[in-house]
Image (cartoon, rainbow, N blue to C red; front, top):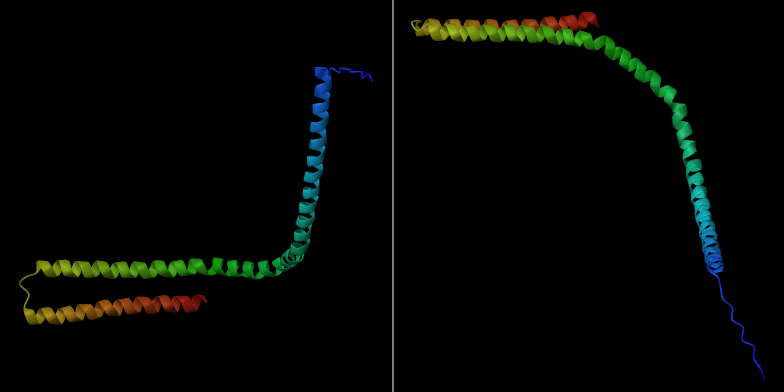
Length: 150
């Protein structure tokens, strides 16, 4: 019995071809797996979009009905806010005037030390009553302006 022994020597190009072929096959298998997962994900996204499209279209259809009352509200506010600001300016002006008069009253009172006690109580009560009457008149005037403007 004789055996024939044959030696086979591989060149680097052959080795590189085998390695690249194996790596290419692995890459193709991974690409197929990736595409399968991508398809599943896209199906799930498509289902979610279909589920949400109904309520979104209903909301889009309802928007014109919501915009009209909102526009009416904004127009009403545009008309009433300047009137309210004018009333607030009037009331704050009258209140600051009352505060200034009260301040001047207390400043002049501290300067006068020779006023009699009984006269002092009577004038204080009269001035406080006048001060309160002025504030009440200012508030009534601002309320009557609001009623007239409405």
